[in-house]
Image (cartoon, rainbow, N blue to C red; front, side):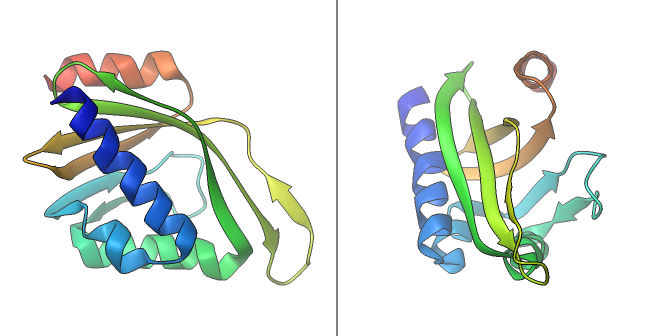
Length: 134
């Protein structure tokens, strides 16, 4: 089951990078909750597929060629997946290339769909959150 959960997350990332946001969000539960980092300019908890799509679209509109570079994707417990990635793109207005430091994203997968995502500054924070959500 744990490896199947990793596959769900990998498939969503691959679809996102192809620009197929509908296929990516199809891996999410209809009642998904997506909690961003507090440091984000649009920090919030996005609820439901439509709000998650709006969040993703805003980033794609802000950065041309916005891409997720998945560095590692691993199971954490029975229902969680830790994805470690960087993002890159080019400012839509400025044309300046950007690349983020590592981002740690914890996803909770139930019945083959991601039901919750939390974004963290460190892997340790993400792993601790997984323990609390079990």
